[in-house]
Length: 403
Figure 1 (cartoon, rainbow, N blue to C red):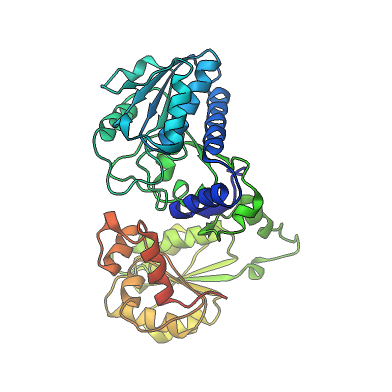
Figure 2: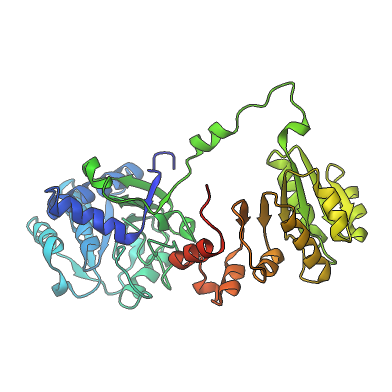
């Protein structure tokens, strides 16, 4: 992960980077395809150096063109390579068609995929579908992708695992489960979001030697927070320091029947370095939490005024774990908001907050997909965490830009 670029792009932006390289910087599409195929082949050889029999499953777009280059290089290096064509090969055009012709020039001819036994190969190369997929995967690609996933043979995905949405990281009905993915030109944000971790395996990036000026033309959609940068924020603590130097977190929650959520949030705050952690919970729950976790300062709070007094010592408030939505929960949220401290809003506090017309710069909202879907009138499968543009718009409407 440390070798991956920090700038992340959406699929449309990656296509624009590709266009700029070709049309304005004079890098031919054929050259980019050759570089992509060579980079992928090198990863294949480095990852599975003993493999001799490989199958390259190709689609009918540029992703398939990359596959043809990989297959040609494998043949030239003495490997036993089989090319399995999925989709109508007569649809090929442009750079992909040229790559096919170069492959046939070394006497390798693609065979139509007809449910051949993929277990006979030592490595499978997924060059079926790229970032241009719209809608759910359909046959004949679904048939081939299911076969890949049901086979124990290791898989190298080219640019992106087929069927994985390059923007959201969610499968389009179905996606190939790769052991390694090599991606090109721009780091797709969908390789690091959503369910991508279950499909990508190890990720390798190659910029195909694009000029740096190409990237200056496109602003990234997001920036990956690299561990080295985050680590620099966690400086060693002074030996003479004490708990009062590291903030006081107040967690508000733990309504009847939901004690555990507030306790878990308190434990997490301590584990991540908070100097002091207080929990404002129902009176009946305070002793239960304190007996199990004496390091958490648990308080029975039954009124907004009591919460106001307790919060006077807090640096930040986290409200919502096990909060509920009854009158007690509403009073707790009203007081937490009135304190005008940095606020983390979670779980039922989000549902209550949705009924309040206000904005703050120092709030962090943490809905899971189901909560976000409910608040936006979506279903969890098509929640705003999947449809990133709408999620972004919703946040911007609720909160002003952070300073």
